[in-house]
Image (cartoon, rainbow, N blue to C red):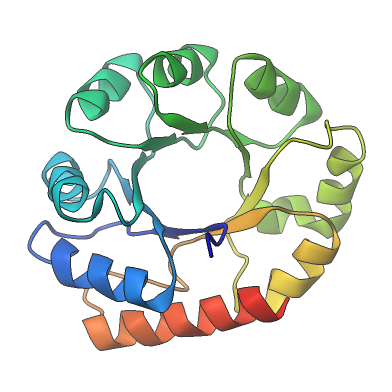
Amino acid sequence: MQRELIAILRGIQPTEVHDITQALIDAGITKIEVPLNSPDPLQSIEKMVNTFGSDATIGAGTVLHQDEVKTLANIGCQMVISPNADPDVIMTTKNAGMLSYPGVFTATECFSALKHGADGLKFFPAFKLGLDGFKALKAVLPKTAKTYAVGGVGAPGFHAWQVAGVTGFGVGSNLYKPGMSVAEIASNAATLVAAYDAA
């Protein structure tokens, strides 16, 4: 089962990635993002791709520039996630054969992102947009558009967002914070997967 849950590992160290990635895959989370404002993110992503690239979709987050996209393509990164919707970043990502998930908040950003080839829309920060805001945007988006709530939505909120029609979720601090043990992360992942499956 390919769950539409993206693990956001902001702050992860390259020395931790093997055990944490394995724990997430074991729990059933197979989309994993390392934000570029983490320590040595390219090293972490490359290690994850080389070991787990066939079992999980490994991506980079907080990608803001085209040159970053090109560097990521060279190390085998599979998806590019941004806090904003930059048409050049989206098109460069798609031309390199990677999945593109730009951050959006308005109808203008949503339609621009889709027009330039985005695979999914990352509604960020979702807790500020809220369910009512999301429903209003969802009503005008193409039915095929994949939508992800990111920022402030944890396991207790999954059901309401799924009823509203969201495709999936990006989960950061509810899953991982620097310094957490692998056991804690595995427990958090199990909670999130159970909530996602139940909803």
